[in-house]
Amino acid sequence: MLTRGKLAKKVGCNIETIRYYEKIGLLPIPNRGVNGYRQYDEEHLKRLRFILRAKELGFSGDAIKNLMKITNNIDDFTKAEVKNLTEAHISDISRRIDDLRKLKKTLISFSNHCDGSNESAEHCPIINSIYNSSETQVKPRCK
Image (tube, rainbow, N blue to C red; front, side, top):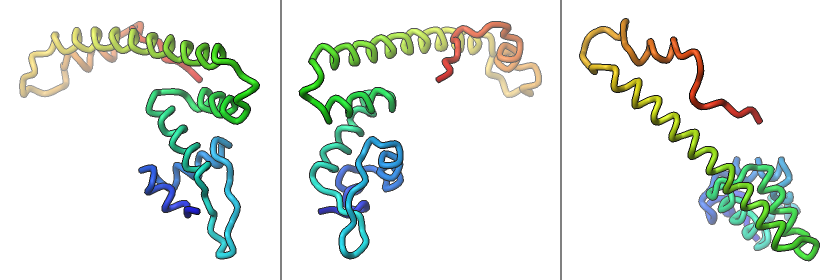
C-alpha cells in the first residue's frame, strides 16, 4: 500500500494531479487505513501510469475516460472500438499539425516584415500585423 505522496513520487507526478484524477473519476478514490491516510494499491499505480501515458500521447480527458471505460469492461469492447478512438485522435492531431503549419507561415510572414532594429516598437510591423489582421489563419476551437 502507498500513500498519495509515495504514489506521486513513484510515477513522477504531483499530488494535486492525483487529487484531480480522483475528482473527475479517472482514478478511484482509495480506502483509508486505520491511520486515516488513503491507501493506494498496485491497481491504482497501474491506472495512474495508464492515465499519464495517455496524456503524454495527447489524448483528451474525455478520450482517456473512454479508454478507462474500456479497460474497466474489457470484455464488452472490441479492438475495432479502441482503434476507432485512436484513429479519431490521429485525425485530431493531423488537424492541429495543419493549424500549426499555418500559424508558423503567418508568423514567419510577420517576422520577415520586421527589421529587428533597436528602434521603438511604436511602429513595429509585427504588432501592426497582429492588430490589423482581419482574418485569422487558424480558427480557434471551442470545447
